[in-house]
Amino acid sequence: MIIAERIKALRKEHGWSQGELAAKIGTDGRQISRYENGHITPSAEVLIRLAQTFDVSVDYLLFDDAPKRPLTVEDRELAEKLQQVQLLTDEDKASILHILDALVAKSRIKSFAQGLG
Image (cartoon, one colour):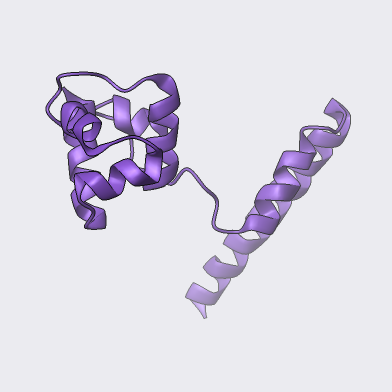
């Protein structure tokens, strides 16, 4: 069972005991042992707490071929702004996407040009 293996591997990567992980997600060490041994499957709520604690996506915990990507964005200011974009009209969202595409293209062209010089 992939979830059991992932929980155990992530816990060990962080250097935590089962009891330490349990304290971080609000349960006890016996539950962590049951999860890691595949005796029980964590509830959706526990999966979310595990993903937040390990800073991975829930799909990484559940699926063998899921990439191990962080749950959080390092640039907190950018993340907050991106959440606010959801409040905009479709037209304004499209405008922002065009601006982002232009900035990324500019950056790529600049990097390419520097590589030639």
